[in-house]
Image 1 (cartoon, rainbow, N blue to C red):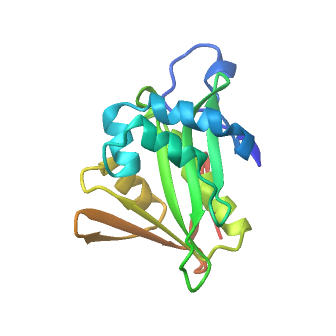
Image 2 (cartoon, rainbow, N blue to C red):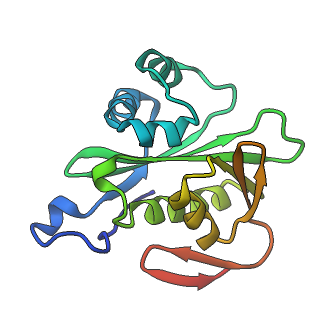
Image 3 (cartoon, one colour):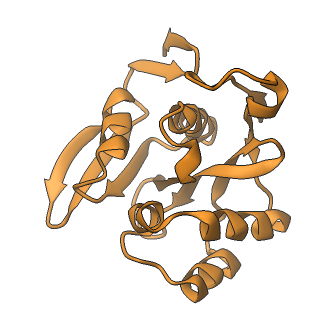
Length: 183
């Protein structure tokens, strides 16, 4: 799935350069994923991994061979990967469930890129027949929590983290970048 979307609040200029291209990443694009993670500022890296992940830890993460194949959606701006949404199936789930994780480089935050990636992740999960998604974030990651709430997550506080659960089976409002549709 490849799409382009314009970013709300984006500066005036060549639209082609700022309009993100949203598409799935293949295994052969691990180098781009690694480069993206390494460009994350300290706070964004902390929010993504839940701890101050060192470069060698991030390298191992990008090189690992998962038991269950993830869906990784990238947001490319000007040909460079600037944001990622990951849908990783949970190995021990009784029913098919998956975990969501997001990362957006600091200079590209607060422009609607997270919203666009979340919308694409929801569509991908529904297409794969995943009935439930979960996302964990740190209590001070207010942007991620607000985004999850906008997409209908049931939010609970657990020890040291916020847990957001999305039920994709129940009828509800599916918000996509630039439109709202009832599912």
